[in-house]
Length: 106
Image 1 (cartoon, helix red, strand yellow):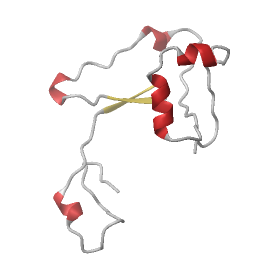
Image 2 (image 1 turned 180 degrees about the vertical axis):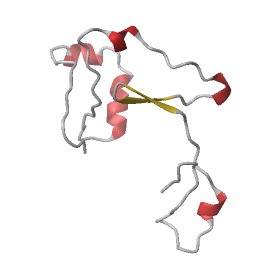
Image 3 (image 1 turned 120 degrees about the horizontal axis):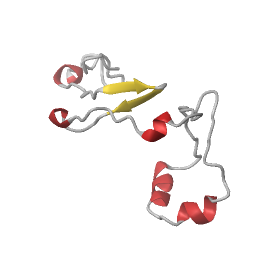
Image 4 (image 1 turned 45 degrees about the horizontal axis):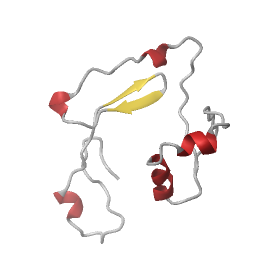
């Protein structure tokens, strides 16, 4: 568990008298909420650009919805398909690109 300034409050995997939490801090990144979604900049703080308002954010009738998709597999299996540029076209071209998930993602 971390405090808002990155201080480590609890280290449940360590013994109660562990000093690990006193010697480390977790970094933080600036975030902005826009139309219900959260965006963050993870680069050098002195190079942070202004938040871009992309034209797709402002398309009439376009609704931005946070979602997640549950894949019942190892994370690496999902990533190795990204390397194959033809994968999505040949295997998923008939699928809808809109995933609207309600409830809790696993």
